[in-house]
Image 1 (cartoon, rainbow, N blue to C red):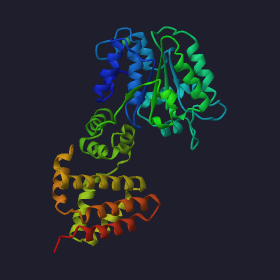
Image 2: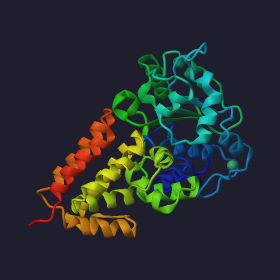
Image 3: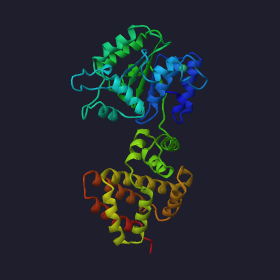
Image 4: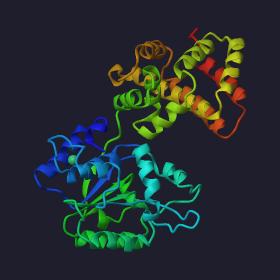
Length: 373
Ligand SMILES: [Zn+2]
């Protein structure tokens, strides 16, 4: 993949490009960032740039034989180590999952460990990078690069390495094989051995911004603007969560929330009863997502009360709502409202009756936001 296909992250891309043009490619680098972020995608684009036969100032050429093979993950000098588990008869080693790994990455490089485990049919089993991977690492690095400038070894989620495998990696990092680059792609460095960490160069990858998530959803997933805004507010920079949410979200949360608050404010409980039927029809996942959305909007209302400069990226109708709703929210009821929504979410998650939960929450909210007499 090319850098240009990854939204935003210009500062990190430039850092990586500079390392190549100034010939300061560290032999071990740690792409550290939260789940659903750009760290794996950036490592893949970097691997492609490192070996591109006609590199451009800002990106790999995308068409040379090396780029073509790397983008299809079929280059003999591009190796992967990732957490796996024993599925049917195949031994739990990365090399036995290469075909699945290729299609998984082709689907999206923003997916999470959980997605990967589902993808290989591991069900509820835990994924690890097992001891057997030690000899694979030695095998990978013992031969010179077949055709590329650099042999690249991408280790996805090194925090899940078995201790023996981690020690094998450490040994390789201590005496690095020539023209070999290790790209460690991690969601959390606290479970990686400090001795490994101290031998890697850190590439910190921030989460996606709301604006980047919105653009991605609109341009890559065909999600309409208003819905993309709503999804971005829930996804909190996690592109994989955004992909899933945009598929799950079956109704317009904002319109639903707006009418709910109006009914509560005016104490129209007959209409609230009708709306509880619609809430029930949403289904559990959507009910939870809706409540999360309501909480996220409430947070914006509370922030607006503190400093309206803190509110970024709200479509006009939502901004209008936030401004009006902010007049009803004050120190005395803001935290309680959030608590009511949190509790509703908690009950729905534990299979409470959705209609009753909705009605109870409505009564509480109606009391909290009633006009001051
Ligand atoms: Zn190329």
